[in-house]
Image 1 (spheres, helix red, strand yellow):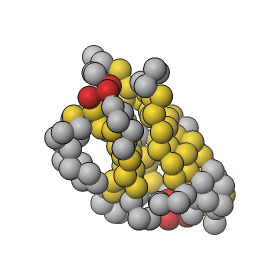
Image 2 (cartoon, one colour):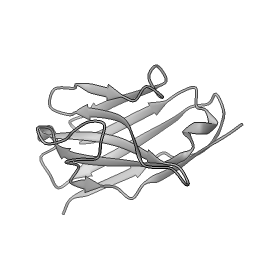
Image 3 (cartoon, one colour):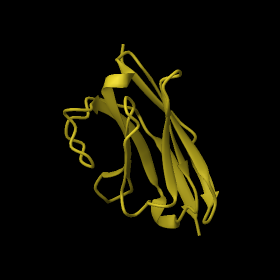
Length: 125
């Protein structure tokens, strides 16, 4: 059974940090790109950051460059998103998703076959 389970969301003040984790199971982790998406109330889903677990290549949306860092622990099939200098506009439900690295079209959700249920992040001003 394929599972993507997010954790680490919560409430933080502006300027603070959170670390999200996505635990993956049930598919060949090294063949997949893992992405973090977010959706704020009333807004479209946005691709935030991606990593290809096999070669470590990464992508960041302009809105998070320099503040967020994505990393992978291939031994544990886990992808983390370290979020620093958080802003109120980062408030959203954050989802991780996985798709075969040669099928996805970063930063869209095209080719993302598996999705987690999301973890909420709230940044207060």
